Length: 240
Image 1 (cartoon, rainbow, N blue to C red):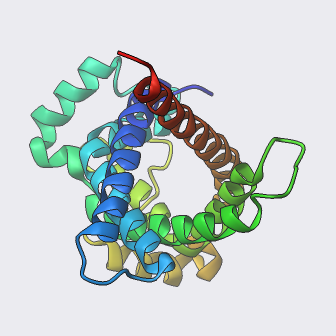
Image 2 (cartoon, rainbow, N blue to C red; image 1 turned 180 degrees about the vertical axis):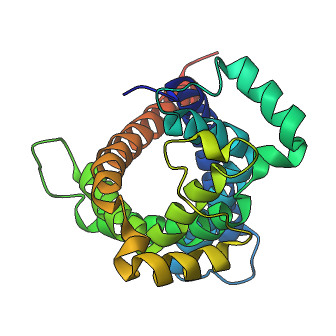
């Protein structure tokens, strides 16, 4: 049940750091560098898309390792994280760590764009509501993640299937998955052989995971940001 957890945890820490750093930097840039302000929705979409693309590209090898470990059946292909890294580099080269990057970036750009547009819009509207879990940040995160994940899920599914391609593909529990050369061909093949519903295999469990993760992440982010801003303000007011 916990296969791939180590690279997953490493990926989440690095991914979130890059994501929110890029998002805040991009937002401040759009607000100050342009001669005229863009609409709030456009700012949120562009900043969210940029943050998602940067974080996905920076942490993609860890994402691939997580998927490969999770796809292992009873027969272990990789004995450890170090062995997996060496074997992939030896058998597939440096490019092997980025197998499936194109559909990953292709899905994360609209995903993060839609997510942050929905989140920022709902967060303001829910700010004055007193909810059992503290504020509207968590609720806005849940709604944003559900809408965004559903919209781009076919590309997420293709990303995972391409990640388990390569020399060791026949050893995985999913050894009946055909080889896909490109993301578009993968989508077409899945639609033809498994039907339109095949593009959404695993969506319910993905939403069960994504919704609480987004809620906790955004709630923590907003609280930490407010704490740091208040801390800086108090420090500036202290006498020298």
